[in-house]
Every structure is written in structure tokens, then in C-alpha cells.
Image 1 (cartoon, rainbow, N blue to C red):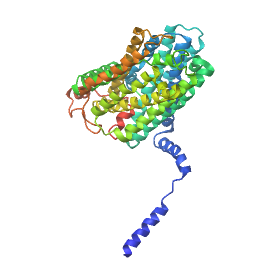
Image 2: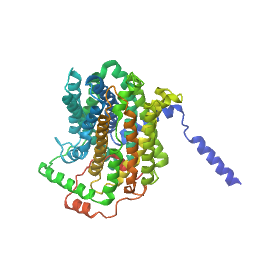
Image 3: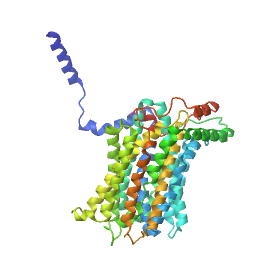
Image 4: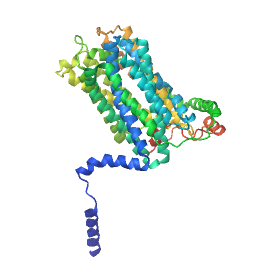
Length: 497
């Protein structure tokens, strides 16, 4: 009896001594978290991730997207099908991500592997945005070339910051999940802010003014290259560069020939390529005063901002409820839901929402939020699956290759969508067949389910690759791999999830 009372007394004392978390502590928790990361790693790394992911890709990417939509429509005055094709062209730099990754890993400039590439990416973006913003009547060829150059700058900065995250994750493995959270939160917060103000900025300063404003995010990328704390590489032999490129290419080719790898890769490509992108037709219809609801520039930005919130919700839903399910079931249901969610677009274009008393503005927001949420739920297992497909020794470069395959699928979707809009004669003022394009897209989205057997029937906690990979191991034994391979942080944290 005495022992029980003594035990209870000790427990009460411990509870009293525990620090109480108040509102002030809750508000300061993110800042304390950032301070902890800055202390454990380095303040320049934390600031660099925030500037590249949050400011450049988040805010800058959102402003770039909305600005480009209105630039093609109101300044260049191209047809929706042409704008769709041009969108695919400007995304080509993202298809060659392994090239940028190999360059940052294999070719140090002035003794540094990361800093010069940040500076080059930022300067390239500044020049391209200045060029397009200062010309009154720029030919469409030069405009697309300038936008592609700006996209190249963003892609190089993306690969370089991924390499920094990977290197820090390997050195501080207990902080790998925190670094992934930092990347995701920075990007999501930046996208929300960027889309929220994008429509208003297009209304106030025009699309070319928005391009001029994008100089600021690119300038921050240059700043990252200046302040980043990186050890200098000395006595580097540039004569080995070509051999290292050749060795990495051979290793990736041998890995791609393995059935355990090429089968899921084929499904990922099909799931993206067959989701025909007809958004340009939808965007032109959104803003048309006769056939469409005539949404304002500000409201278009708000729609995309709420869509970003839906994507963030999808990430959280996958993290807390779906991450332990098997890949095949997740891919099946998310792909099916993606096709069904497209019916919301069909209802909006046919004005069926008005029949049931739902206003266009509310229904468009609901449509975008549901679409982005399901798209994120579909994308997350594919990302984790890609991480699990990377053979030992070439994880970083091979992950970049898989992301390039996905980018090729996305560009193929844009090109197919542009061809579909052209064949159905959907122009700047004619939208009679837009519902047919949306219906065809929805049916095409379900077609990849016929190849669902290509996806392994395992979950994220199980190994997908066989325990021995003769071809890749042989290549790794013949030549030493670069010390710091480019690696998206998700690869490091996939197993812990």
C-alpha cells in the first residue's frame, strides 16, 4: 500500500515537472525546428532549400504558370492546341535531369560541385525572363526559346538542391525525414502563396510584368550559390569525366533491362502519357465571355491556389493512411478515381452544375481541389515505387532517370492533348467539341488499368529488386562511382516511411 502511494506521488511529481506547451510555444515551434536544422547541418543549407523549393519553385513556379497561360492567350494570341504543344516543348529540360545530375556529380567547376550550378541556373533564368519581359512584339519561336531557357534554369537548380539534400541526408541520417519535410513544406507554402497572388499580379502588371517579377526568385537562386557552405574539391582529374559519364550510362542501361525495373517504368509512363492534357482548352473556356463562365484573372489564381491546398491534403492523406498499402492496389484505385474525377470537368463544361443549382465559381473550385488531391494520391506511390527501383550504387542518377521518364510521359500527354484539341477544332472562340475532348481524356485515363499487372504487388516496406543484380554490380565493381551522387531526398526517407 505504501509502495503504491509512493509510486503515485512520483508520477504526480513527474507530471508537474513536465513543461506545459502553450499557444506561444506552438507558434514558435516551426522557428525552433528551423533553428535546430540550422545548428545540426548549416544555416546556408536550410536557407538554400527554402529559397529554391519555396521561393523559386513554389512562388516562382506558380507565377510562371499563370503568367504563361495569359501570355500565350492574350499576348501571343495562339490557339489552345498550339499553347498545349508549346507547354510540352518548354518542359524538355526536365526530361534530361540525369544529364544535369551527372554534371553536378562528375564535373566540379572552380573546385565546387554545387555552387557554380546554382549561380549558372539563376543567371540563365534572369537573362531569359528579362529578354521576354522587355520585348513588345516577340516572335513565338523566340518566346518559346526564352521560356525553355528559364525552365532549364529551374531544372538545374532543382537537381542541384536535390543533390545537396541527398548529401546532407547521408551525413545526418537521423534528420533525413526532417529535411524531406522541409522540402515539401517549403514547396507547398510557396505554391499556395504564388497561386493566391498570381491572378492579381497578372491583372495589375500583365503577363510580361509577371515575367519581369520572376527575376527575383532567380536572383535568390544566385544568392544560394554564393552563400552555400560547400567544401572545395582539389586536384580533380578532368580527364576521367568522359569515362565516368560512360560508366554511369552503362550502369543505367543494364538496370533498365531488368524486368523488375522496366515493367513498373512502362506503367508509370503509360499512366502519365495517356492522361491527355487538355487544360489549355479548359483555360480558354474558363476566361471566355460568351461560351464560358468568364472567370477573372484573380479568380483563376484563387482556383489554382485552392488546388494546391488539395494537393497538400493528398500528401497528408497518403502519409497517414495509405502509405502501407500495396502499390498495385493504390495505383489501380487512384488511376480509376482520376478518370472518374475528370467527369467534374465534363459537368462544368456542359453546365450541368447549373441544373442542380451549383454556381460555376464554387463548382470550379471543387473540381480543381478534387483533381489535385487525387493526382497527388496517384503520384505519391509512384514516387515511392521509383525510389524502391533504384539499384545500389547508382541510386541518385537512376532516380533522376526515372523522373525523366515521368517527365517524358507528362510532355507526351501535353502533345497528345494539343493534337486532340486541334483535331476537334477547339480554338480561341469555338468550344462546341470541348466536352468530347474531356470525355476522350477521361476514357484514356482509365486505359492504363489494362497494364496494372506491370506494377509489383508489394508495399513500401518490402524489397522489390532481387537481392543480387549481376549487371549493375559488375559495373559498380569495374569503376568507382562518384562520391556524392545526385539523390532526391525521398529516396533516403522512403524506407523510413
